[in-house]
Image 1 (cartoon, rainbow, N blue to C red):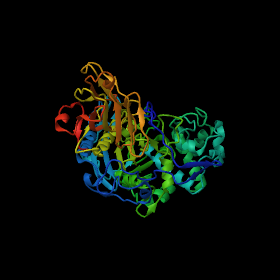
Image 2: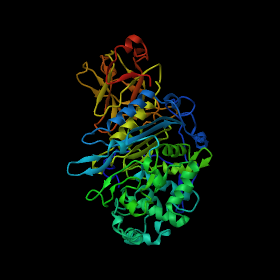
Image 3: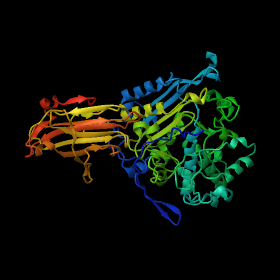
Image 4: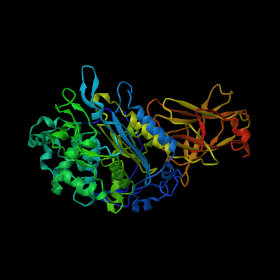
Length: 610
């Protein structure tokens, strides 16, 4: 099953460039910028997160260990709230629990600072459609989740297929810009001759979301449906998330390697990385440690299977023998954390290397700049607030699965979040949206500290949705210039911070244009007096001419206003070092002076150390 409904209405994201060069239809993997961990702009501690250079990070082989939040450069109270907020979704939210149980894992650098199991891995025997209730198993037959509970990853499986494809690109066996028919001539039926490998990986092939392959009783019949499938749009003309892309890619990989996808997964990813609880078709011995999924029966399921437990949930993957490019992999949180760490390391973990740093960069580079709001690397989705929450940046990569799973990697802060839930247990209609994913991602983002630019504290806007927060200075006569430090990261095209002035005691406010400059870069003007979106998560110097200077030096009030919509938020806005100067450059107001600082009126803003 796909999550197309959840993928609609996503916010626009800024694209970024990678060190990729197309020559003669092939992609040359060169010294791409940003492979592995980016330099930490937010002052991580402990010598792990946020301390490596880009070149150094690509060569690092950080491995995981459990440790306290401080060792990871994270704030423990916000990790505690992450768990509390995740537990709230075990109760009706609003009508039914979002999941019966979940495993949460969060970390930064080489430290897993949070690994917690909540709720039940197996709770229900069936679903009663007449009463819309779950038929609970007797207590002695229910199973709690544990840290090692294995989950059906659903579409998170697509990431593994994509990694296997990029490995073949790196080795020269697969050409990113080649037509799929170069490897599978039969694929060209239905007008698909021009579809390329890259379009499969970025969901721009033109395939519709899915087709019921499971209705065909034979493998040949299923393949015939795929070969004859007609495109919903011309190749490369639109973004449309589709399971058929990764099923097709599976067939390409099996053709060029002569190995099944399950064998490729083991040989090329899970065995080298030591991911011993990750595989297709888990054996019966694993069943007691696997989370159950759905009471799969028509009309909500395409197949009549009863309570699915230990077998793949997705109908097409089941019909393909449990091994499919779009779904079918089972795994646990720790194994996914190892994969996350390997990618953040630039493709290596311990003694194993599964990708070069430049290949990882391919996966984290937006190939869909022509489709704003649908940023996509090779396999990985990028900058998706609808499930990445405040962790979302142009380089944040991840994926979700219909069963309630998600993986988010943020190279900017070297952090990672895994949420594995059985949200279709007992039935798929009980889950809606991605609220637990967003809530936990917001908490992990908040757990990454932002150190004040000057002094002990900086003014922080908070991270509330559907809110307006104001930070107002007292009236200052003769003001000519405002100076301060500014840090912002907001949901693009939705949330923003505004600098405003009032010359009538606060009855009316008007925007104040300003200029910002980040270290080592040219100043950027903001003529509308507002900032929003992605700023690099670094402090910027800000300067603004005060309107009152042109009106005889009348007293003027200045304020910051931060406004958010009701959906998603970014990490928020910080302001520090507020100073108002006269025409000669003398300070009329300086928040570092206790008497001046005490006159700031903060509504929704707080003085934060982090």
